[in-house]
Length: 162
Image 1 (cartoon, rainbow, N blue to C red):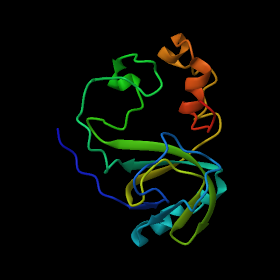
Image 2 (image 1 turned 60 degrees about the vertical axis):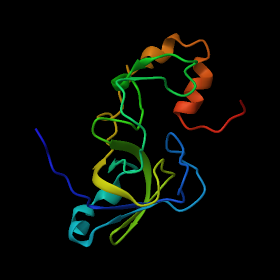
Image 3 (image 1 turned 90 degrees about the vertical axis):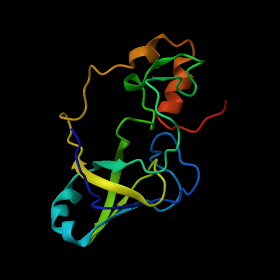
């Protein structure tokens, strides 16, 4: 089955060639989402949420799709694509949770994002306390890694010494 989706806006970031692996909340630079004017009314009351999900089309990926991947910093461990956060997907759709700083008309200003400038936006959803935070969530296969704490710093996008 084939589906069609369309962009509802554009994500603007300072990243042209290299972007972080995860959003860095206190990253330097301007991060904003420009919603196409026809969707501006859909932003009503969104400013009442602290965090939002941005769902976007990963348009800059050039790598070949593989169902087995070796995540960075995994010490060579091979896992299934769907057990990873690799941007190389059968459907190149990305999701980021970001802090909503302010909304000005059709522009949403956010904390740091992990996408390239010009990324097409597909959707926005509010991050709802208790609904979107699961206390029993775990680290899956990462639990078995000998350098788990170091890997978690990378997963969280926290700058650190190697």
